[in-house]
Length: 293
Image (cartoon, rainbow, N blue to C red; front, side, top):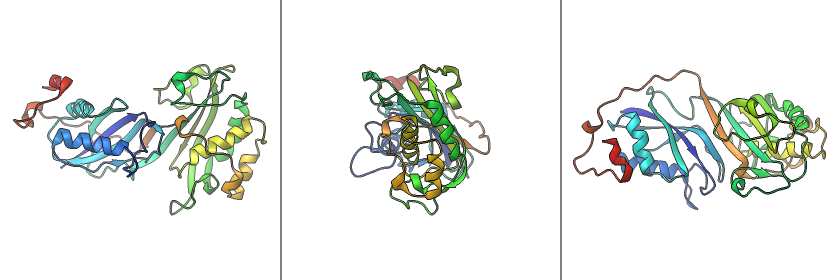
């Protein structure tokens, strides 16, 4: 039995989130369906973080177990054949048997993107939260430093309690203004595009775990600082109070991205087998999958 890791990017707009739900299509359901269609065997997919409805991912990490002999590079192209354009398999590799996408994860990084412009950009309406009021990104950054360290983050959690504990460790957070938004980059801080007159403000936060809606609530709280409605010290006061009702709004899902997941141990390169060795005689690859043969 092989343990196979997937690195997945997706536009979360049309999904109810990662996890299978009865009220609409999910990323998990689409990926598991593609695995079944390609390998002929149903597999349950484990994931690093269950993103919510409308939330995007640049590098979601998942794994599943399978007896398929399809080599990893062919799994990547084969799965893509059965997935919608809004879901992309960025990489496939074989990992040790004890690898678990959820429990082996050490740190996760999220990005929240704000379009700070009076002019609506129709091409970005699904991928950034537009705020017309001019924002003070420097004040937002300074206020956000209160988040760094080990804290009880119940003040930002929707529907508390959702987990056994609301204590998490934030290792870094930045808020910056940028002239452009390199959507595909996973580099922390987006340092190359910093500009004092840019239209994009990006919040980047890394932690050992995230509570339900916590990044969006943090973004909404920092927006109040950016609008000069709250002092920078207000964020520390909210954390100390532990009261969700005094924190900011839950910012819309469309601006949020799961950017990167860190694992402690480097993962080995997978072994492969010739593609034709595993193909059932009746298998007819659809469309461009003929190139896999």
